[in-house]
Length: 111
Length: 115
Image 1 (tube, each protein chain N blue to C red):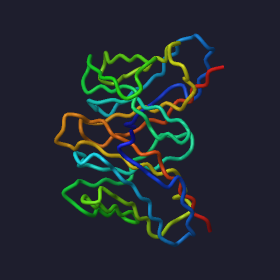
Image 2 (image 1 turned 45 degrees about the vertical axis):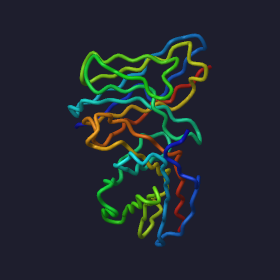
Image 3 (image 1 turned 90 degrees about the vertical axis):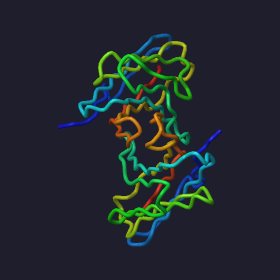
Image 4 (image 1 turned 30 degrees about the horizontal axis):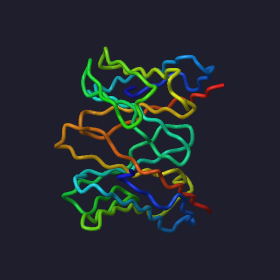
């Protein structure tokens, strides 16, 4: 089946630790995106990539890093510099400028 | 500053009646608009979209209306069903002709359809 997968579904992290969230797609989409959802805040863009080996900061990139070494994969690292990392993280993909399709999300909780 | 605004955080409608969800935007350069539906702890699913060259787009029970002069769009669901209960997000982009694929999202409206 074609789609977007995110793993794990739930993730717990101790303060001061970096953690990497996985996002994989087999839709042959060129563009991939990371969003963060907080209650009452909607979806805020962290990073996006329109082509392999290239990516741009979104509105809230501080404390996060990404890589795009393969077309299918766009992992997000939440670093210890992120002050409030507890949130629901969503990955999406699309053909550039077309409708975005979302993965199931990862709930990150910092203990 | 929010460029896409959904001013009603919640809406409650009886089953079988019409649900109208509203969305306003401030950037006149937006020319492609989308609605997504989201259940708790799941990713949003694409519902319907509209290009700025149109003022209406219909797909089954869902219709989106666009009023460019007012910078306003709305999603109509007729008839509403209990399974429609979810958070609905409005989103906008600079358009398919742009090299920028990013979307700007509103904060969402929680729709509750009761029997």
